[in-house]
Length: 122
Image (cartoon, rainbow, N blue to C red):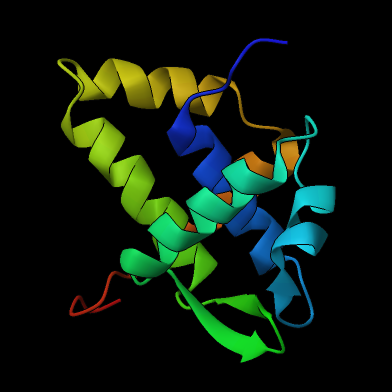
């Protein structure tokens, strides 16, 4: 099995936490992350995410239970913005991104773009 980039695994763990109704243990998260990652790998990712203050943890007996500490939409938007900032041709990247949207996603994007921005009058 090919190894996935560490950033992708972090994103998958964060997505699993975002979809959870309650705090989760490493074992519970491992079961929700695609590709059957090792328990120790998921645990390492959780320690890194905790150090980055993206997750909180609470002790339960001998283990920790983790919870997302940030707003998922803000987290994903920040990552998208960071990738766009490093592109040599941001317009081309945005064009390709828009071409991949489903019709529902395109409608949602249009609705967002049609709203007045913070500080602008309608």
